[in-house]
Image (cartoon, rainbow, N blue to C red; front, side, top):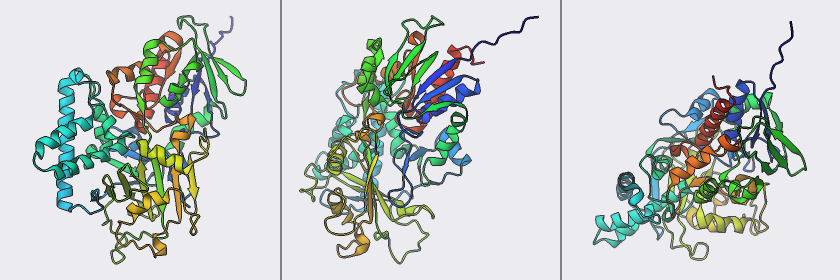
Length: 509
């Protein structure tokens, strides 16, 4: 009686150890697939990473989780005792002259902004491909503002200025957000979710524990090779050839071959590295990669000796101060902000102890973030290290280069005094993702004008070349459409691609 010989286990390469790659690897490992992960950095996590530069740990990348529907990250947060914070719903808005907008009027105009977004969503769904490729969401706001306030130009201006707060969710100004959709999906839905119309919470204890949980199986069972930057992907011409292999080359001169390859590199990396593929990418896939855009969202953490903006007589456990402050199209800082880029800040002193800190978190985007990152990092680019800059102000001449830019807005907050040490930052940290080639030189995907078929482009990237050349793609740019640009989307994309590869290998049962 002859001994039966088991066939060799399929060998799959996953490029990248971000949340998409780790989730994909976990599914493959469950079916005893041999998994090799190539990571260009010296750590796992991709854009999920932290810094202790402020004296405590903060997320440099993803920091939010939406709470509607079935969100796997929300369940992982509960499982790992990750601390979440729900904002108090209060906000304060300063107009273009630095005057605080009456709270009743601010609330009324905030409601109008959401109403117009809902109108734009319906208009986009009903008209779809008839909308010009160049028409933006801001164009829709301009039209509605004129209709709502035909004889009140100041109210028109206020409404349009308030609409600009959406830029921080897109990573670019609202003027670049496409209004188009197709019959099945809508490019505005993910924006609608990000902007709070579907509830979100902020992670106060960082994404670290969530990442560790997702990475448990890959760290234990996969062959993870760090400091391996992929420079070449040679795919077979015909995936039906069972003996054909995908060949991966790395910058250290190594060449390895696999049965299948899954690239979880960011969209921005794909845009800049098309020449790494041999043969060249199919024209429709190459076009899809070009069509979808990448945002320039960055964070600036400014921490102080104490949270001077809070009422010193108030109960320290009471969350009374507005969680969100918006500075609309400021015209009162012409030297540092001649383009009147709007600013927004979150009050991290609202968090519960021990995550409560006297810190303001500013989000910057688009041309503003590009200009400020160039100012803070004059010797750029950093390539793939570091992802942040930190400075410890201690007196005149040692302040962070970005502090003069933010000072006009900080100075508007309650109890600010230029003579008070409590009002001088102790540390400042800003991210620099757009200088990081491994992050794709940006934040996450968005849908900018002009664009004809965003949904079709995402589907094309999601399909990749798995069925024809054994090369697959996964990441927030291939996620379910409503999750594009989110950590949840990356997780789900890794899960979906892992399932498809298992089915191709005959292991999905």
